[in-house]
Length: 81
Image (cartoon, rainbow, N blue to C red; front, side, top):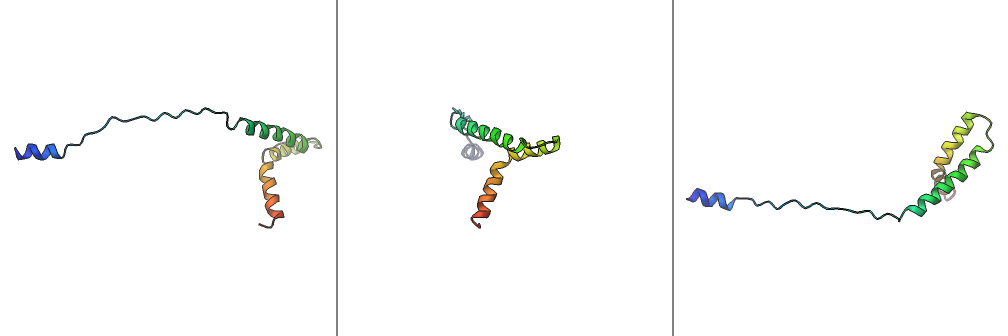
């Protein structure tokens, strides 16, 4: 009988697992994405318009992708940070 009471004291009751459902309603980054896309198109035109070879045009396309990083780098260099 002592064994039954000891096992009852140490019995673990598990609760059913609860699943958390996260719903993304969106709409918060749409205008930022559209603005970045328009800036990308403008940068691509700027970098590609004067190229004469495919290689130079491809480099211009890559520059258009990373222009925000180049902008921040030059800004920090200008501010001596």
